[in-house]
Amino acid sequence: MKLNLAIIGSTGFLGRQALEIISKLKNQFNIFALSCEKNIDLLIRQAREYKSRYLQIYDLKAYKNFKESYLSKNWKVVYGDDGLLEIVAHPEVDGILFLATKTKCLNPLILAIEKRKKIALASKELIVAFGSAIFQLAKKKKVKIIPIDSELVAIHSLLSRYGTNNLKKIFLTASGGYFFAYKKNLDKITAREALQHPVWKMGTKITIDSATLINKIFEIMEASYFFDLPIKKIDVLIHPQGIIHGLIENYDGFIYGMFTKPDMKIFISYALFKMINQNYYFLEQEIKFSSLDLKLIKPNKKDFPALRLVKYLEKNTSLPTVLVGADEVAVENFLKGNIKFTDIIKIIKKTLKAHKKILNPTLGELIQTENWAKYYATNLINKMKRR
Ligand SMILES: NC(=O)c1ccc[n+]([C@@H]2O[C@H](COP(=O)([O-])OP(=O)(O)OC[C@H]3O[C@@H](n4cnc5c(N)ncnc54)[C@H](OP(=O)(O)O)[C@@H]3O)[C@@H](O)[C@H]2O)c1
Image (cartoon, rainbow, N blue to C red; front, side, top):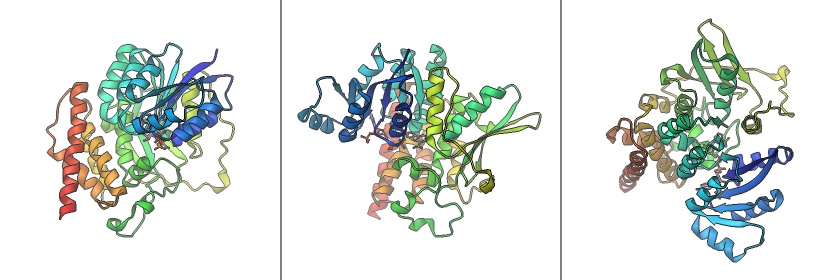
């Protein structure tokens, strides 16, 4: 039996890679629905190639444009959050890949858990901002959410082999981004420079988050939710070569690591095979050992000020949600040239400091908190622009 898949964010970097893999796994997977925010040209090409039954477009203007050039009677085209909810609840959808950026797909994710669908989740902001509600519900419904991110897949695969009984610590690796060992004044970094990543090719938002290392702060929080670990058991190591993705250290002194080429297809494949409970394989992953020169470096908080924000990663509070909201606004404004690269962390920190923490927040309170953080960060930036 083939698994009927919906891919939310199929036109993005991860979405395109996922479809490339699925094109080689036609006996295992069938594409039932594809979804984007506004890139309808690519969505149409994908829907034709993969014979998708449903197409979802989040943006209203793009949806209206699409209707004018409606092309196939075989497609059902839906719009916005309601459209996504219709797809997620569809009885023929078995599994869903959540690959959209930001936090807009919260309601569809909650519904997917309620409906006990198979879920693989990449959307970092969603996990960090709403992780407490998402993972509590998943536990209640006995739904296992599969990670897609490389570092989380590394830890997922290591813990599934070695268990957690003897676990002392886990280490997530970071390439250090474009500016590792960079002596230029970071105040002067342009958006174009920050969008170059030394190891990974990724979407715009995550590339900037990697350059500031906020991405690693997000991953610490994600790992804490995915593996039910306290933050103090999670550490970060700089590893510029991008070959070691995660390590676990046990109390017996043994350290196990997961090494692969830095290719997101490997990690997406892992998640897809977990969805169908099969052993995963990826044929093209060959590391040339003759040219390996691997380094693991303890990061210095002076070079990576984002790491100081670890203290705000308090599980089951509203603080991580503030981090996500403020980061979204700060990154958008940096890309528009409104603020400096180094202002991103300052804006996030100021917003976190101004927030009155909520303990055990409800989903509604978390949604309000994210909106508040965006509003507060926007005001801070407007004041900076006036200076
Ligand atoms: N790239 C990586 O290596 C990587 C690794 C781990 C985790 N992640 C996480 O995975 C997510 C996606 O990353 P990416 O690099 O693939 O980003 P990306 O290239 O910017 O793609 C984002 C995708 O999400 C779609 N989208 C945005 N809002 C949507 C909505 N409300 N409904 C439906 N689709 C929506 C976009 O549609 P349009 O094309 O129409 O804009 C696009 O297909 C991010 O949260 C990122 O942090 C990425």
